[in-house]
Image (tube, rainbow, N blue to C red):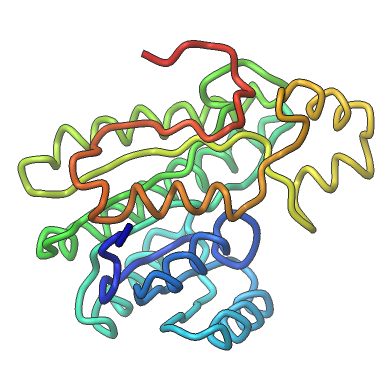
Length: 253
């Protein structure tokens, strides 16, 4: 199936590793021009070099998404360089799980407001696109109560609500908005590798809850996100796509 992404222009936050990087790579493989950001200059430089070597148009910049002015500058510069924008993927997360005040602030500033900053900066450009799409990355922790039910889960739930509102508000302008809720996703350097090494009991419990007997791979989540972002999903709007290998037990109506 042709996703219709060739020649489209996309932005992805948190694109140096894990799910974000897999989304950047998948978009580029499908023919989109992709710009990504992350907080660490060395990581951005290395990731951009590695992904450019794969082929396609990929650029990266060091941006703190909690800095509204910085996000607006990046979005504006990228739109000028690419000649517009068609897709934005708000992926970055503070991954602030313990129930501490500093983590509540970090989750709000990065997960929630980082998403709002990206969308607000991109909207004028998306309004001029014929294939405008917003994808926000939430989590199963935003849908069910689990070990991350504090700041992380609460703000991920807020992102789903925010995205549903965007879908309704922007539909008449031809802009789609959908969220994606990944299940536990394992990759080198990720949160689950850290838990595996430092809290093997929690890791074993989490692994045992999934009837597939494993965690997701970043590319499995990325394929779903890229489909949602693509013109192939042209009538999918206001959805929260659960990609968790049947981990969650609730029925989503």
